[in-house]
Image (cartoon, rainbow, N blue to C red):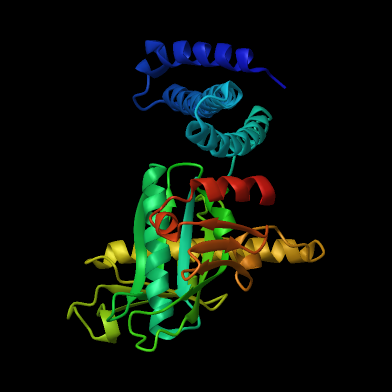
Length: 355
């Protein structure tokens, strides 16, 4: 296995090769041009991979420096308030260092970290309208967290309710270490709080399920167009009433598996069809991977969406202002801050404990 200095040396050589005018000067239609273009694309792909390794090493160095700074503050024993803050940060930084080191070792072996895009499906469970409102809370939480991570987001489908909730919302998060951070969120999330519509002040318990599906690369899932039944219909709004007379919403049935997907978030058929196909591909990959796992003795692939959908993984207890993760038996306070997207400290712990 190469060391980081060898990686940096290779990267510098690649930059020289890619800047060579002869590499792209003979591209106009010829057999030689095709070879030149293929070589250019291969070098470019390798360059991007090496850049990820170099960036990961920089991240590790930065986190090590932060650990040293906090250790210095703690050992100085001067400001009690600053020491308390440094101790909290130190735990987070040490957990992040472990995760980064693990990712760095994988990359040095030539392994990819994981999918850079995921499709997140959040569905209301028990609890009626309160469950639908909880779906909205979870969607906003992940959306704000994704924004803090500089991920891109795209809503693929949704079924809103009249009171501002969602029976279901499906969206894509991409461009970053999305899967490695989001995979631990798959499962049933439970909320305990007094709904705004509750006059007696009684605490209600509602649930929502979260599925995290890796978005397949094009080569992973091949779909025969003849296996699809595609229908177009009018998009509907909260409560099910039709809000568009034009048939822009799309419903796709995959005949061999019976999997049906829909999309109605966009105003044109083509975009909704693309959204629905993205959802279908992700579900087909999930089905394929689940069957492969079952074939090799029914082993459970830890933290993948299908394996955790039926399990209660978290409880958001509003009266006690506490989030509890039942898998690692750990709690955090300040729900308002958490639901406002402050998930990084929690996700770092889950990555460290659950892998």
